[in-house]
Image (cartoon, rainbow, N blue to C red; front, side, top):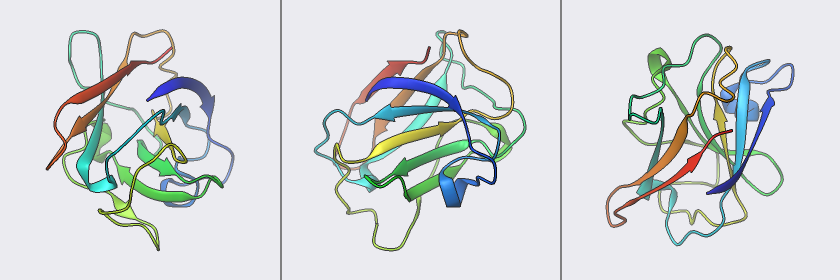
Length: 139
């Protein structure tokens, strides 16, 4: 993962429709290289001391967007806990065995409170055949 870019979700957005909830603070991250599938990775956001970030308001969660910007998969952070504990909800044509390559981007909906300059990190954690982690500091 790389190149996190902060922004806000456009009006009318929802996690399933645009990958984020209207007006929420978001980060877009490129997928620099990947040899894994959607079903082999879970994400979480944490502070420098490892505490999982709890988002406030909106519809926080994680989404994967395809090359045209459409939602390929999403995960709603229940109770604002930015820690995936189960798999994705997939859009038509995408599934756990779909390759998660550099033609996709990660979109993280951080809720209604601006998280910039708070020292958070996003982690991609391997599951199944893929083990290990990858992390990126969020600006």
